[in-house]
Length: 396
Image (cartoon, rainbow, N blue to C red; front, side):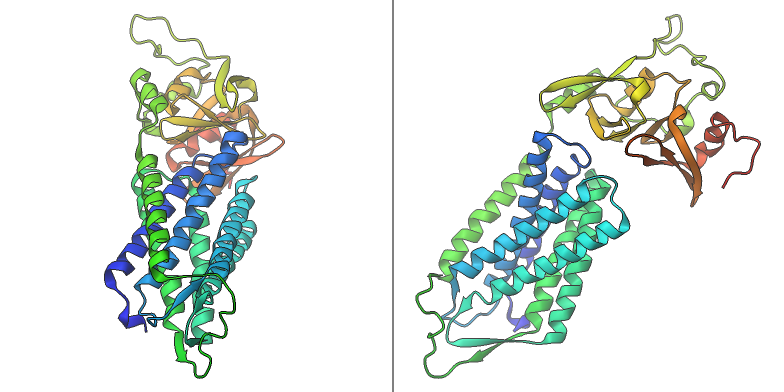
């Protein structure tokens, strides 16, 4: 059964799953912990692209399989299989997108998503109708469910990582291979058994579609996924404008910070350059909302996190998008209150509630109604301890 698959359609199924994963993750990576109508739409779009990618991969895989010539697809089970997929993907993404996701929450979401994707597969398989019965090897069924759960966990971790560029591409390819692996593992344990007597009695009056009709539907969905993928590659005009007005669009490494920042309320070297007056710290930061640009006082800012050419500002309750780059934010904030603790993170020292060693670096916990944690690079640990008054103590 498995050896007779069309290799070109098998490759297409992996590509479709990867493109759907890339588009879904690219949308999802922008919205975690950022409420608002537009972000809910983006979350729905991310779930939709992931679900369509998974479902379309399944049926491209079915077209690749050597099915009996009289095979048709029952419309109702086929539609139900897609609804199952869309529902579990949406619930899982939403569940891990609220608050700080714990390992237990991510693992629970992965089990829900994995079992849901496996259910989508087997409901879709039993939408096949013809002069045959379908028999499954239960050891392969269990293995396919395990693959689906592991795939779901990896996919949710990719969603939470908010990756960009090359790492996002690698994650999407891995996602496509993993989803396809679940499908073909299940197909390996599936066998057709010829029926005798009334071969088509199980059809009843059910609405059915031929493989040709399914091919058209799948082709349209492949086009939708490809179009979404291409649109996700189109540069954001706001980002291009930000790059053009930012003197240093690439965040400098943490080691490049002036040491004087630790002991002086103002940098020794003026921000405006030699012979120019130093720039005053910004009293407020701009953040984008569904209805326009808002401003929040720097006294309420807990941390700033790099997100490509933008940043995410945490005010103790939630993250919101700021149009500044991490370099611009570092230049605008008061260095007596804020410290770059990592290439991608700036923290407000007065709001640090806890510091602990973790691996080669450290982790800071910042206070607020929704406390959150920020990593500290190994090169910045000594400076962080000095700013917190721990320079002469041994602190784990």
